[in-house]
Length: 318
Image 1 (tube, helix red, strand yellow):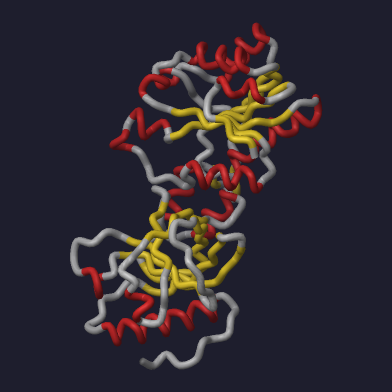
Image 2 (cartoon, helix red, strand yellow):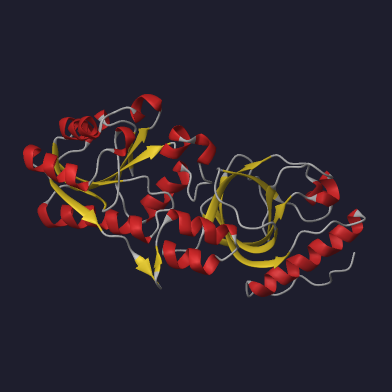
């Protein structure tokens, strides 16, 4: 996938551009409808579909105290867009200066830097430009003057639930992966980079990958059966602890995601892993000794293996 880093870089795309524009946090079914609009337009009339999005999330600049956890940080979003076949994505830096760009100037810049701007697809209720002054009506008016078409894509509802980033975020925070998956059109995952930890898991016989999650929404604290992708491999089974590790860290520690991959060995430091929370196993507990913790990890591993349809690893005794 070609990744562009400014509006001016749109000139690098040959032929006419059919643009899907939005934040697209989560790349959920509503977002995919907007993206599919651009793709179908390109297929019907020639040219190429291009997703135009923003980094960071505009709310982090406009109202940082109200900024939500992301469903997909930019790297994760780009990965998902590539997986659904998008060949061009423009990631526009969003800062205070850009936030002051008028809606009209934003559209004029898109038109100016595209070799040929054929269509703009957005959510029907999408607002843009300084103070959110831009909307579909403005796009249609400017399109008539500048020679591009506009489609405002209606919201998508599944089981009477609107596919929105807010609703999905609420579902994940509550541990309802079923709702999240129905609205996303895929299982919910988080992307994290493996960082160096205390390596206590290795000492206990259960080496873990400690992940620095990319500011993404996490489910409730606890132990989960997980499926992990990364390093060119998909659906690696494992067990994860999401929590504060009270047995080894004490009070005041930060929440950490650590994953033990079954029947796998290798160096993952610095690599990105995508983690799917398959099933909640138990709440986080505090143990009186490392030996008790070791026995519980063994029991959790066997429990996760069963949930994932794998044979157990044997005794859970210490």
